[in-house]
Length: 491
Image (cartoon, rainbow, N blue to C red; front, side, top):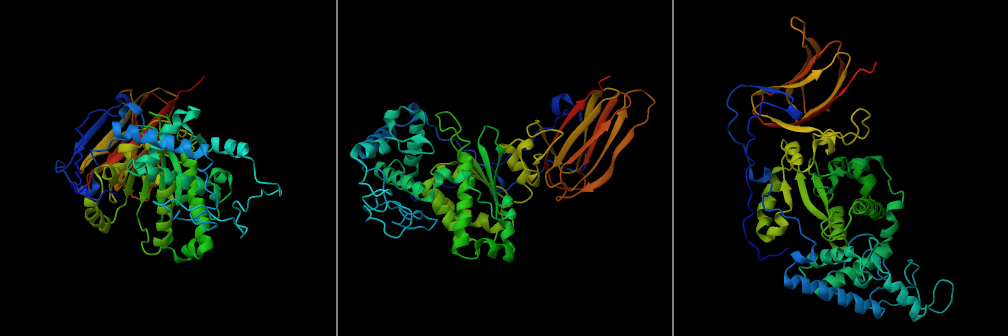
């Protein structure tokens, strides 16, 4: 954080969308209004930030001072590797020499001194002899190992001519404000930590020790520009019994941290680390019911672990279901955050979650628990069938019409309204004059706990399916999405 940056964070209000007489793919949308829905309701902590611009990894976009820092870091790494001084020995998984704990690297701005031989069986380098009892490797063998030093499978030696090397080095430089020495030490410590922690092989390990963890942290789909999305929700740990089961002692905490690092490593495997490519992920943090005091120790260790070893891996951080005290805390901290840091934050309270997520993630890629249409198993639409976003104003009733349905065809549709609290029904209206409409779904009130509606209807004659959504009893605008497909009758 840059304490000298005291600019007030600038938020903007999202304007209400203009009324549109048509829905998806030209399908008609009719609107009935009740009352005045023109009043704009907004709050600073519900708004998105207008100043966000993702960092560029093209050398041509760097400032001259940044280009020089990158070149200096390359030469510093090359010199250390050539002199067999880059790889640190004896760094434990928590950053201490010969330590076996999992957590904070513990080393940020100071280069560790050269460790003494390990005699406690921690699994690090133990003496000048290798495990077979022979003399330690020759200079040629050591040089070969150093020349091949990598992080996330990417060589750190710039003479390997891998374009991804610059991307990795820029991440470490940006994490240390382009201070070359600090970035070098951070990188050196991170490589040593990864070796002690076994990070390169952690993805293959079976670390899931409780089914409840499936909803705590998980990678799920991508945002609209291709960033992998990681969701975090710790509200279930308000259950004291479950909390003790996961965090009851130091060993359990270490196990959890290792599992959490595995989730991050899985996400990193989805990045390409190329200039102009996808080089970071989106992180969604659900603060609903999250216990503050109980998770402090775990949160601090997770934060330290990620800050020290996974620099610049988050392009944008979205906080959802934000309680009132979070906005107050953010107001106090805001003057001490750089504009660059603040531009990565998006904050939305309960009731604005779906609307906020839709700004960055297509509805078909948002999990159903957050107002999207993405299910674990979807045999009808599949995981990537596009959906169309729309909004329902306060006091509004809309009809979504799926026209051009032929006799014998089967129509399938998927519909979600963020937070629901609306009435819904559907019907089939024949094209032939004098024919009667068929009620498909009876009118019913839907609450926030209801999942998306997924239904189908086989038409015996030509006509249209009409989905009626009534928000006339609510004073809130709602984000919504739907998709459909028509399966024609094959004779």
